[in-house]
Image (cartoon, rainbow over all chains, first blue to last red):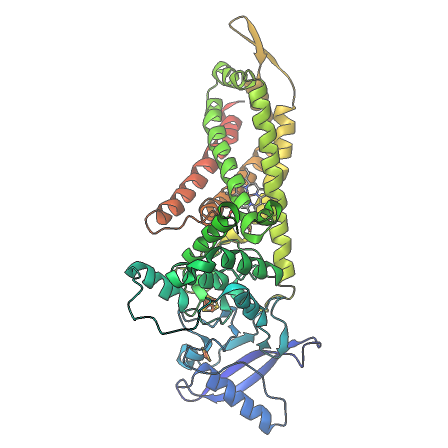
Length: 252
Length: 227
Ligand code: HEM
Ligand code: SF4
Ligand code: FES
């Protein structure tokens, strides 16, 4: 269908210090072949023509790899499709006359910058606390010089597919950052390159996660269900094991 | 080395203790429901002898009781901290809250109401102890020895429909606490493996149903048989 009319309810907020509200927009002539973000582009063109402020929303690659897009769509982070980011959602999901509520990620640690754009630098600070491996400069090591068992490589790859979008936090009833933090700790704990900083990393990243004001994990697993990369909560269990081992057994 | 209090009060440490305390209470509940199955008997002696056996453990029982009081208080305290922390971590809620599709999510009525079923359980435990442990003392004589006749007290209390209803509703809701709590405790302890996790998840549902059915059955049975 090329001519859908949609009733949009969009969170509008002028800036970080203003209070915002849900605003209704009626959008005509939406094609089912559009992506969700293209639909918002159409809304913005209309708003600009009408002399209004366009709706700010984050996006970059529009192919599900960069982690920039966000949006809670009808109460679900990244919308109704499993294993996809908002930019991969298409309007064929919707019918003429549907009402769609569009909201920003909500967490105290994600202050709203404008409309649907939030400041996700709390996640960067968790990464800075330990989400890296230190490398010494020198000659490049031989490829395959460092054997890694296949199942470790696979698990690490699954964790590494985290694109840092923050949907896990947005969809968690407690606004916990456990899945994101766990994906990073887990990925490096599974690989030999991560071994030297393994204990320090687990402690520092959990400590930073707590310091940013994210909630605690109640094991709702809604994070896994909304994660565009379908990262499993088994990584959260590994994060807990890493933390216990580092905190209670090692001398770090 | 990390200071121990810092480890315990980290988000991960808090849930570790919460899980251990929760599982300890599950073990207690299973023992409690099995022991109290003796209440289905109209003959008071077996139940009173079981009660007397526990009391005769003396200081062992008292130590265990204090440990369980501490466990309960810690569990309740950290549960309340988690619930308050959750409001602080998201002060402005969503206009619309939905559920993700697919079957990965474990967000259920049980998981969303842990704090309310928990608080209700706490109130219940206080009333329950007041009615029975610290309730009326009836004497009974078994084999020449005087022991406490709890059987008569229980059968007397469950003649009140209001009391029976309160028990049935609270225990029913405690079942929901266990349904999410059991598997969740293992996840909090870091136990998650494709070989065991489906088993643990199902076992949690079975324990929740068995404990709830056992405890609901007692007052209902007594109400309808003990005129
Ligand atoms: C017989 C009594 C109880 C049993 C057997 C029990 C059992 C459990 C278990 C096994 C868990 C899972 C722990 C985890 O996920 O790590 C849990 C969680 C929880 N319990 Fe209890 N509990 C009891 C009483 C209470 C009481 C009295 C309260 C509070 C006032 C409470 C509040 C909570 C809360 C809020 C959670 C969820 C924690 C979270 O958000 O992850 N419980 N309980
Ligand atoms: S774990 Fe998934 S939902 Fe969370 S930041 Fe990474 S990709 Fe996004
Ligand atoms: S815009 Fe890059 S993942 Fe959606």
